[in-house]
Amino acid sequence: MVVQGEQFTIQGNSISDLCAEYGTPLYIYDSEVVARQYAKLKSVFNVEKLSINYACKALTNISILRLMHSLGSGIDAVSIGEIHLALKAGFDPNQIVFTPSSVASSELSAAKKLGVRITLDNLDAIRYWGVHHPGIPVALRINPGVKAGGNEKISVGHSDSKFGIPIRYLEKVRLHLKENNVKVIGLHMHTGSDILDVSLFLQATDILFEVAHTFQNLEYLDFGSGFKVPYHPNDATTDIDLFGREVSAKFNEFCAKEGRQLELMIEPGKYLVSDAGTFVVRVNAIKQAINTIFAGVNSGLNHFIRPMFYDSYHEIVNVSNPNDTLEDYSVVGYICETDTFAWNRAISKIRPGDLLAFRNAGAYCFMMASNYNSRLLPAEVLVHEGIPYLIRRRQELEDLFRDLTDPEIHWRG
Ligand code: LLP
Image (cartoon, rainbow, N blue to C red; front, side, top):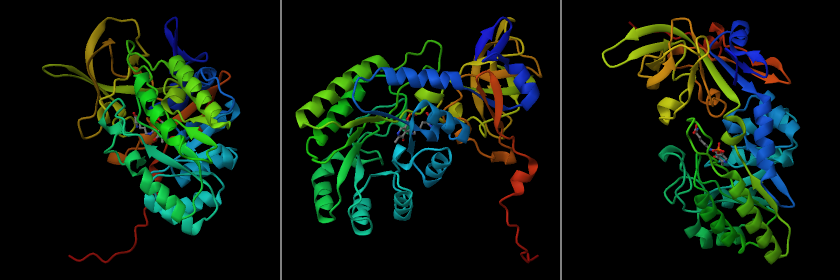
């Protein structure tokens, strides 16, 4: 979203016009931003074989997946549903890496049947794999025991995290692999999200290299993701150039030492789609309290939970009245809970009916939405080559009843 005179626009389309056409609340995505982020990330690595596998949990709309496909991306999937979406979007099974956590063995087998690359993250899974899919090579997710990430909930590489196989169990793992005749062709790790400090990434990558030296049949190393994007205008972002340079050098050195050319993989979510998304809501009511003025909008934690769940900062602009005097508002939702998007935030004077836009709403925003309070999910629009496309219709009242079986039960009383 950029400012053009008095207007906020996405590839020349004014936000107000898009809202007039598609209604509010509305998620709008800008394909140019996704393409820019993809190109930037690709440019920082200097290795012979690179795969950028989009962590599609960030935003799985099939049109976004098709966009990623057109850019040359692969897919990181964490559920059988994501695998099916990616296949439907046109990805070849070998462009999809499956990196689930604690899934049922039946899901592992279903993924194997679809031909995707499998990552196992626990000893039981290794045992199961050896018995049910002998001879089919896999990757292992390693937990490097490094604490990194923007907050507790998204810090997943430390030694008490549920993710991956802790490196202290590696000897046990080796025994399991041998006993069950499981061949490992890849190693994977992912330490968290919103990681600013490149040295933490590198600490974890060094551990992965150390482990990798002890496996003989590796074809790829997957370094996960977690690059921090700027949510606040003054936020720093992960020094992606430094990361790419350092990891490429270490990777090339590793390949030279081992005498084999491996594939380097990463699996970004936020970095590719966060800044591409804008979420637009309409102001229903202004209410004066003692310590604040509330601007109540036609949405809430049901559509956009990051501010409440992670205390995340998302910039808010008054699209309808951008250049008026700044006043402090608490922007809140309509859910019957305290769903505060921002507390006492300076925003250009807000009037009932104004449109407010949240920046950085591409990653983990629509995807974490729900029907809480029996509210309907918003629509999604993708702007590509200047043209807006509706890529998900707004839910209708009937959608609330769709999955209910409502059997005839004889109620007593
Ligand atoms: N790879 C794996 C195995 C992951 O679990 C994740 C994210 C990623 C890659 C992508 O990480 P990213 O590049 O997006 O940081 N809902 C939270 C973030 C949860 C991340 C879950 N895993 C948020 O909104 O901050």
